[in-house]
Length: 307
Image (cartoon, rainbow, N blue to C red; front, side, top):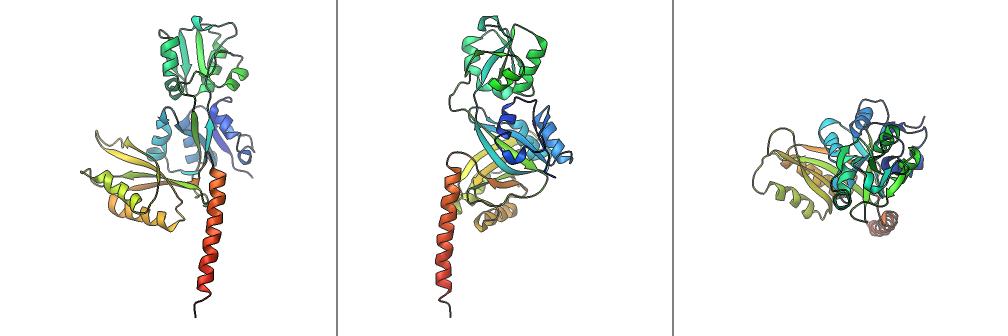
C-alpha cells in the first residue's frame, strides 16, 4: 500500500498545489489538515506516513512554526524539498471592490508578503489570521461578508466562489516557497545534488562559538545554503542554530563534519539529507553523476596497476 500523506489544507492552498506536482505522492488521495502542527503531529503519531508543509519563503523567510516543530516538538526526517513559485491575489465575494474592504484575512506569512500592498492600498483595513490561505478563502466564501477580503491563490478563489479584487499583490515578484516532505524514519538516498539540515545547540554560549561551528564547514569546503538562530525555549538569550548545507550524510566529508560538530558542540539534531530542488537541480545531478563516473574510472585505472 502506498504511504498516506497529510498536508496543510483545506484544498486550494499553495501547499496542495506544490504537493500535486509530486505524482508519486498523490495515491491514495492526500489528507488535508487544519494547521502545520496538525500535519507534523499526524506523522509523528503514526496517523499518516508522510507530511507535506511549507518551511521557507523567499520574501518573508522561514516558516517558524514548521522549523520549531521539527527542531523541538517532533522527531521527523526531511525526505525531499519542493520549490514552487507563489502568486498571491486579493480575493473577495463577487461584486466586492477594493474600496469596500475593511478586513483582510490570510495566514500570517502571506499577509507579511503583501505588507507594502496593504499599506498603500488598504491602510485602514485590519488584518486577521487564518491557518492557511485556502482556509481564509473558505471562511470568506462561507461568511458572505462583502467588506472582507482574503489573500490566497487563484485556485482557492475558484474553489470557494470568490473573484480577484487585485492580482499579484505580493511585494516582490520573485516569490517562491520551499516545501518539505517529512517522515518518522528513513534517510533519502544520495542523488549527487543534495542538502542536509541540522539543528546545532551550543555547548557553551561563549565568544566565538558560532565561528567555531562555521569553521567546521569552511575547513571542508561545505557550502551553507541557510543559517539562522532560533530561541531554544529554555531561557531568554539561549539560542540554537538551524543550518542547511550542500551535501549528503552518505558523503564521508559531510559525515566527518557532523562527527566533529557532535563531539565539540554538544547536541546536534539531524533533520535529514535529501534531494535539493530549485533551478538547475536536474542538471547538477547529471553533472555530478558524470564527474563521479569519470573519477571512479580514473581510480580503477590506477588500482589496476597495483602489484
